[in-house]
Amino acid sequence: MVLPPRIQRVLHYAPAAALAAVVPDLLETPAGFSMWPSNHALWASLAGLAYYLKTRGMMGTIVVGMVVFTILRLVF
Image (cartoon, rainbow, N blue to C red; front, side, top):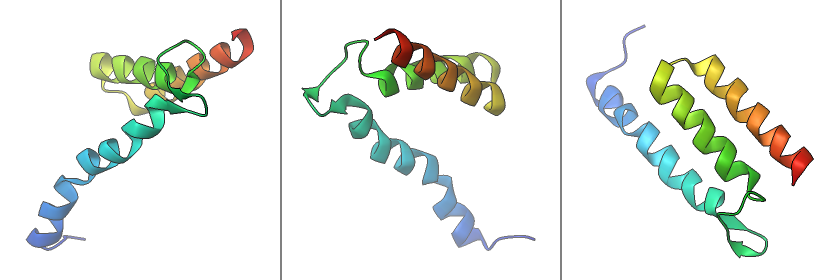
């Protein structure tokens, strides 16, 4: 199936829009702005991002993010 050019142009901006929507949620905790290790989502996202930038593997990115998130929840 081929999408019309207008739809393709709109979808080109979807990743940036999704990132802009998620970043505030990663930095905000019930206690306010936090970059401490207790902000599990932030650090798991950064680990997943680092993995993705190195390998471009989507499944590994999800696994790395979830493993880091789980470890942080168990430790902190």
